[in-house]
Length: 635
Picture 1 (cartoon, rainbow, N blue to C red):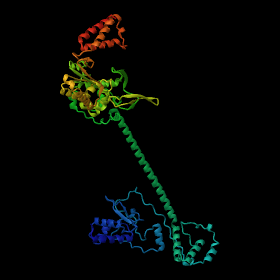
Picture 2: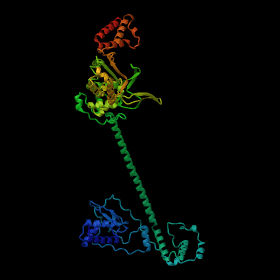
Picture 3: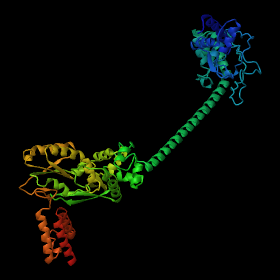
Picture 4: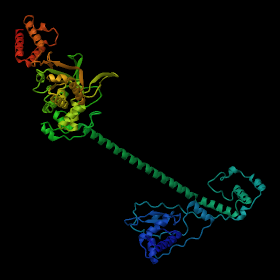
């Protein structure tokens, strides 16, 4: 920080240079201060000079500009606002400063105010001197040459030309003046000459009224003459300024247009790259499969150890899954995509009559989806275990194994789960695959391949659409639905098996049929048992169909999944007698004559019923099968 002595010395030196009207830098002031014996630092001098300029101590006529002196940094040059910084030269230390000019007169001050003329005795660089620093580049734009200097005008006016005039004389002389013949009439951009007759009358009238003095009028007309003298230069400068302005505007427009076009090209390139990235990602990855089901497609981390424990194929990404299924990414996306409204679906829907009345809707998948579901069943679902109580759709188990635990029981309770497959929705199926160890992305795709929405066919604007009428669930007709239902119901089986063990009962489940049986002690706890089953089913996302709940005692035919279990698991006697009667009558009346219920394929139905009897009673089924073969050979 500069001390008081340094500040005072710098202030004195700056005042001397501003009064002389010369250009200077902080370095020039530093050199001058040191020549005067001041022990100053350049940084302190520079800060003081900068503060003097910022505070306005240099005066309103001084400006500053950065100049190139060949050094790494560019110093500030302090100069009069009319001076060209390009003509700055390093001052001679021995040369004295120019003597300030005396105060100009009224006319000169007025001219300087209007046209900004430089103060007199302004120093100019010596002819042929070189600028400080490196030589200027030939390509550097040079300052435009000043207009041609015109000699000053001297009118030679005196006060006798502006003598006062009376009102009557003014009116009398004005009558002889033609206003329209005067080139200065109505002009506000110039001062008419004193020898104009109308102007002379006005001047004398103002003197007579005391508005102006003759000396002031003389100065005014001198100003007008000076204005006439410099007007061509002003016009030329204005023309040059207009041309420079037009050129600058045009250059700015071209630059803006260039920048705009560059930005457009960059935006187009970004869009092109984005489209290519989307096409590449669309062909190699799956990141969206419909609203409400795509939230976990970004997680690609599978539990490899868990998958290896169950001997399941390791799949982490949609691309790996498509490769395993033998599909392309677009084909896998098409099969798994979820849409509430679509013009094409992957299933053929048809209805079959229920034994209890009404119609059951079955959904048969198209070829590609059926092949994908078959791969999932063979390579994934068939390798995971089910609960011992589940007998439906499990290899080695059947309706016979489901009925045998209940043989000879005093009380048999049958309950049915309502809308079993549709109630197993997409989130529950996805959770099954995720629990196996598959990543959320793979589990999502597997869940979508194995589920479908119930749909209604509607027509809008002549176009047929399949509109979803409910959430995605297991379709009845897909080969994966039974195995998935057993996996979803595992917790239900565990809880009901625990209840049965607590009450000393037997429990089995075949798909949606629940069966519990026990001894005479059960008759006092039937209400409690039914309530607990309903509560457990509700907790696990299922609903008990109250209309199909049955309590069977020993004094009636106790049936479990169609087999009578009073003494042994077998087909009802009425069914066996009906098949034996059909075969007996066929010996005399013919086999086709026995189709009294109009079965579409009577022989296949008859073979199926005999196989059904043979499953429960092998010896009886074998005899009936031999009789049927004898009849068929005879025909």
